Amino acid sequence: MTKLPSIIKADGSKEVFDPVRLSTSLQRSGAGEHTATRITEAITNTVAQGVSSKDVYSRAFALLRKEGRPIAARYALRRALLELGPTGHPFEDFISHLYRAEGWQVETRKIMQGKCVMHEIDFYASHPEQKTHIAAELKYHNDPGYKTDLKVALYVKSRFDDIFSCDPSTRICPIDRGLLVTNTKFTSEAIAYAECAGVELLGWGYPTDNNLFMRMSRAKVYPITTLTELSRAEKNLLIEQGVIAVDEIVHNRRVLDMLRLSPERVGEILSEADGLLAL
Amino acid sequence: MTKLPSIIKADGSKEVFDPVRLSTSLQRSGAGEHTATRITEAITNTVAQGVSSKDVYSRAFALLRKEGRPIAARYALRRALLELGPTGHPFEDFISHLYRAEGWQVETRKIMQGKCVMHEIDFYASHPEQKTHIAAELKYHNDPGYKTDLKVALYVKSRFDDIFSCDPSTRICPIDRGLLVTNTKFTSEAIAYAECAGVELLGWGYPTDNNLFMRMSRAKVYPITTLTELSRAEKNLLIEQGVIAVDEIVHNRRVLDMLRLSPERVGEILSEADGLLAL
Image (cartoon, rainbow over all chains, first blue to last red; front, side, top):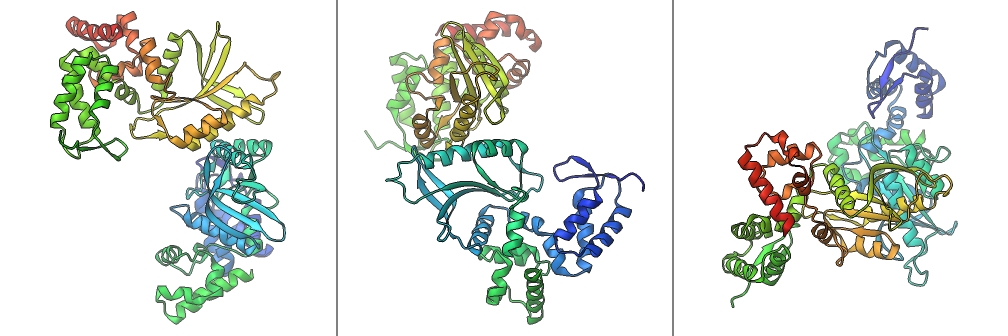
């Protein structure tokens, strides 16, 4: 086998193209082993030195689409999450939707009294059975190369410390755990600090045993931007109206009414959504 | 007396024009009571509804200039500090210069081990007589309406907590106090948090009894941008070469050589600098 070419990652760094990783990624996205191997071979034989990982992704995605839209759609999950922007608002709604699907009661933008000052908490959730109450700071970024860094972990630590050390008698609501949630990655510094200082993190690939991708896949909660049958403008319109996750259109197809689509297109969109949720 | 007009502050908010405050400010800047009263009356009689506080300032400054450049120059101190930008680097040099003038030994951009991670500290100073060691995070902004906010105070708190809780045997250098220094104001939330959580703050007007303006005036350390005899381009050239404070050109006029000025202009600049330092 000839030497593998280097590709350029989203953060601008170089790495040697790794066919095993691509194949794993395709399989994780629902492609069978045979399909994953076939697509990986096709990509490996043609990937050029210095091409961006985004291009490699797009080409693998195009090949996967031929195998059936639902699998391709799931493969595109991370990218779909990045398309929820430009503000952090839809991400907040999406995370709320995910937690609700997991059985939590969720409130957003809640004002909480700390020992020293009041804090606006992006996300507050309680679980009636687990009897746990969590508060989270949400960090959304639509740049795939962005990593949530040490400064964010540091200020979140102080914010939750201030809330935890508030006199329990004046506290508005119970709180057991403080989290920092992001759709991107964390810098290694942010992870080292958070693990040492006791800040819980949830990101696309962190923690390795129960990260955002795994949680989404397990709960089958996917951003509406995952659907390849919808145009960008249609997705934006749905997001503006608070329709943020694929299951929402499956559970209530009337939310599509605002798009004034032909019955044929509604059918196509619902098939893709059904296929995705059935994966 | 007729109703006083409203003026627009740098942060966009409105306030009723206050002649007493203007007069106090002129006197604080070195104008005698008589001069301050005369200028304040001239401004009060002509200030129009809806004019910006910047315009009021400029006109008072123009009148004060007629009384003698040094006083006007000192009046312009806060503005001069804002002109040190666009990066925070010259501000870092300026604060170092101020602390050295007060008898401190200063290092900048020092790496320090915390309990959890390493931190780059903008500013580290020790005082041989007071046997005190301080570390500071510096926040520079060239927008006069900007205020250093709660998030900054929160992350600085965690950063210093992490350094303080580092095992003393592995610590590179002693540290007794952690500071957050800015050339702008702090939000009231940032102040409330810092006072309660034990983060020391130093800003243009905070703390009221020993703020940055008072420290600069007492040490007679003024940014080079204070001098009205120098053009913007000449100031930038000096700053790039690390000449950051007025006393530097008084103590060593050769630092002006790089500007290739006529002996007359050098004389004018040094007179303004001398006058300012003699105030």
